Amino acid sequence: MQQRNPRPQNQDDRERDLERVKRVIAGDQQAFAEIYDDAFPRVFAFILKRIGDRAEAEDLTQETFVQLYRSLGSFEGRSSLLTWTFGIAHNVCSRYYRHCSRWMVGPKDARTLEERPVEAAVEQQVDAARVLDHCGRVLGESRRPAHREIFHLRYGESRSIREIAERTGKSNEAVKVSLRRSRALLESSVPELAVVLADVAQSA
Image: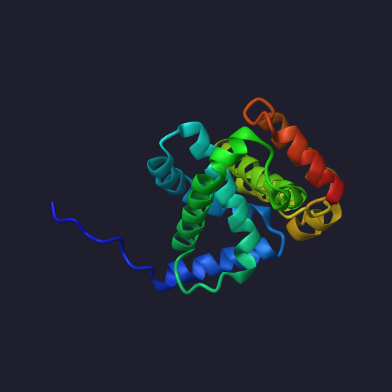
């Protein structure tokens, strides 16, 4: 079978990338979950091929998405978002090879330590996006679209109960009942859910 180069990014792909990036910058965690879900398998495979250790590759893949999240404000769509992410992954791997031996025998340098509080906050966003993406898949199999929309508005966009009720045309109590039932369904399927939902509830 003839080998083909990866297909060039078409206009629909470019517009989808830019639209998702705008949503992330506006605070839509579901948009980053979509980016994460689409890119994770290929980025992990890219890093694993270069590192050769699954545990290290998982950590470096997570770091890649942290760096991606932090850099989305400068994404202009000249290349595909996946190509942009591969570039970040390449840099993460290069940094790993430059510094891993030193980090293994002592603490990280001062610059790295100074960056940790910022990176920890972004890592929380990455983790939240991953969990919410999992929630969306579980709810997609078991709940009607109206209930999935309510869940997304509350935990993907941090909307208040009142805002959700106004947007969906339901009563406040109906929105609360829908959310309770969705959470009950997810409790056994998404162990990390409680922490993420607590954080969202505090910010909404």
